[in-house]
Length: 337
Image 1: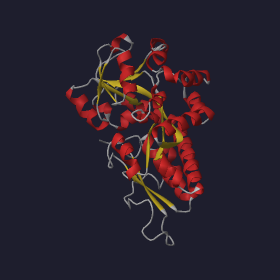
Image 2: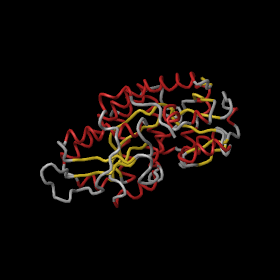
Image 3: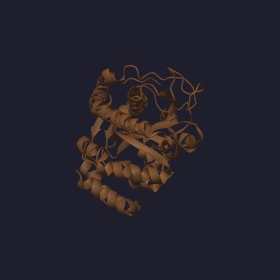
Image 4: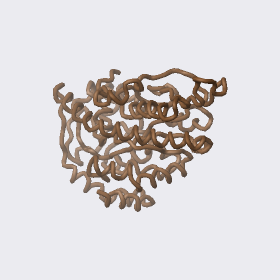
């Protein structure tokens, strides 16, 4: 499917890094670090391709860490799920399926329920609130706790934009979602959100969703607007409903034991490069949202503003009921706004 929201706002940052590389799969060079050769060649797994938030975060990370380490680290980008699904990559990371991945915190839920903090609905008031949390002390605490529990090192933080619903029919209220057949990620937290709405969530891989919408197997899907447009869902969904229900965080993920085995200066470079990538992509993302929405309007799609306060009210007891162990983080995130 075509990718149409290009990273025009980030050209000065990522000009070289947005090309997927195909190189060695080793994490150390065959020539033991001969002059001009990298000491570490890392495979970076990505579900998407150029123009997507996660891909562009990884591309900025690649450029920055190669700069910071004077080429001692080389990062090769494998987009389009070349190395496997998210679960396959994460489960195989400890044995070298990939060395690093850019994905959302919530994808770690199969490894620890703490990761469900990423997919709690209606926690944030907007971009500034999100960035204050994830680039501050609370965000670092969450990343460390989730990472330690799951067996990964989590670094950086990229604003993805709020998740919205794209649908084959018009919907505006909570009640309209009753019985709605919606593709959802195969994660308990996402499924519970839509069950709470009275919808009928169907777990599907993202690369199966376009066909499912085309064939009527599902009536909609939910993702950030830019991501949804990059996946060409405008070709099969006429209605784009700004529920803004979840603000999830993309970050760089490494096997924790492998990260801990790295020299301190390489560890520091990983953290610095991830923080840098998260900042530049987050700043660009807001502009991308505006471009995406205008493109949809120009194409004759219906962009629907809903009463977000009414949706938030519907979910007021959700976290306490479904995920009581996350109550402290939920309260602190809300308070930070």
